[in-house]
Length: 77
Image (cartoon, rainbow, N blue to C red):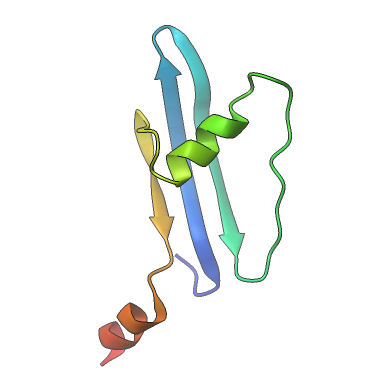
């Protein structure tokens, strides 16, 4: 993960039964960046937010969060 990336979402897929609501979604959010998630009803906006907030499990992919400053400092010592 790059130094200024605070959230990295890579290839997230999620299905509810036969309905695939997320198919290999990926993006990075950088420090200071403001984003919006837009799309029609039923397109997976709430589902991706629930996955990021660990309220929903996803079928595949990975979500990486920037560690707290104290953890980054300990790693460099």
